[in-house]
Length: 188
Image (tube, rainbow, N blue to C red; front, side, top):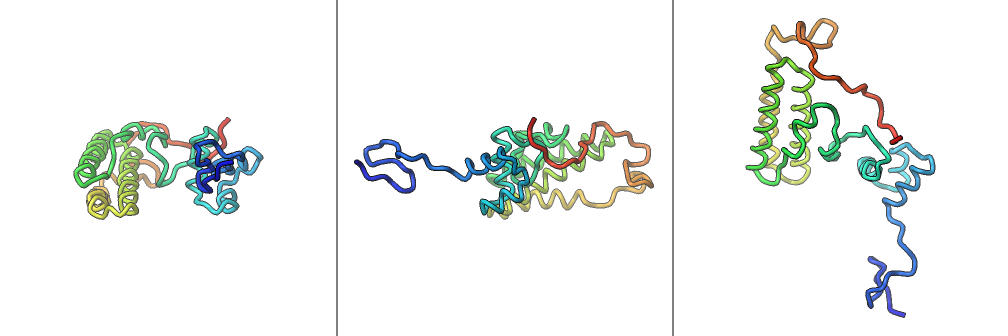
């Protein structure tokens, strides 16, 4: 019988291993489907990141409504996500600049409509790209996003201040539904 590679489980002759290997992804799905739906607990049990657990479950269609730094933009966070899907990146400084141009164009259009929630989402996208680039070791690319973001953090002009109750700007009408803010939920 051929000797098996410990890492791949494949014999030298190319045949499959006799015993299938159970992956961390398999364990995540198994734990979730057995009723353990607390992502933090699953991550602790398997000694992995919560974001990894969520991504595995999302890819399997078992979890909806979870978003973090590593959630791909293909998963819509809200109605504004479509403005940025497949338009942002940071593989090099030029790509980062093009991404900031896309963010800024959306931000300006949303500002003209008085859509504060949309402007906030544009800022969130810039911060997300900044952090993804920074934690990927791309300092120059992250700086492109940081400079844009800093330039858009100034306080609003006096006539655009928030309403006294802290909701929308006085006189501005919301242009899109706001998600209900509930915790991530298992897929139906």
